Amino acid sequence: MTTNKKIVLKISNLDKFLDKKQILFWVNLEIYDDEVFWFLGPNGAWKTTTMKCILNLINQEVWEIKVLDWYVKDKEIRKQIGFMPENTYLYRHLTWKEFLRFNWKFFDIPNLEEKVNYLMEKVWLSKAGDKLLSKYSKWMLQRVGLAQAIINDPKIVFLDEPMSWLDPLWRKMVKDLVLELKKNWTTVFFNTHILSDVQDICDRFAIIHQWKIIAQEKTSSIKWSLEDYFIEKIEKENEREKGN
Image 1 (tube, rainbow, N blue to C red):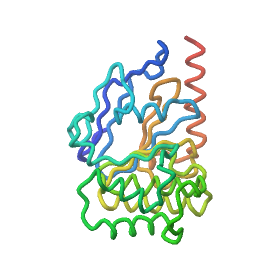
Image 2 (cartoon, one colour):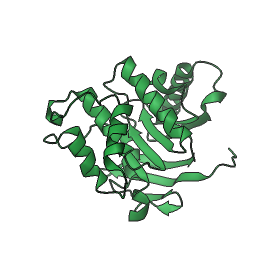
Image 3 (tube, one colour):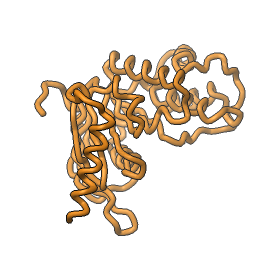
């Protein structure tokens, strides 16, 4: 695929082993500026592992990963990256305001209080009060994690299953926020296996299965059911693996 857009994330030849077994084979991806990229795969496809490799949270055996033309290990580029893990690791003894203030200290962000209030309105938690995060439900913690991921106005944000545990109303909130991030020139890369959640907001997607990328497409190029497309690609790859 050719494009005039700037590459903000380039992954070349990513391999990963676990307990001496290879679980990722030569993953290659190019993600462009101000696009919403959907990393799709069935459960157990190593989507989260791939994301953690990209972010240098776990070691990779063979790889070359650049974000905004910087190697991801460089500390300076990390200031321009946001990340929301699937399982939010929050300090439960803090309130949401204290937690966001804590994260603010990693970045040179002006107008802290204004920023915190803005973010909590965006994730619909401004009326949640100042109770401790330990008293929050799973879906409320998801939204605090989402606010934390974008507190630094990142150039690219990684969201790992951002809509899990959310009902349709809150999933709509996440969709709207993702589209707003794109409008403000932020690239969004997120994992999910829920087709219905994101088909209408993504520019491109890649399918990972059997430890490798098996398809990459523009979402607009799929003229029939994306669910049928996904199942067909998975079944074809399963048949191919059986034949080897």
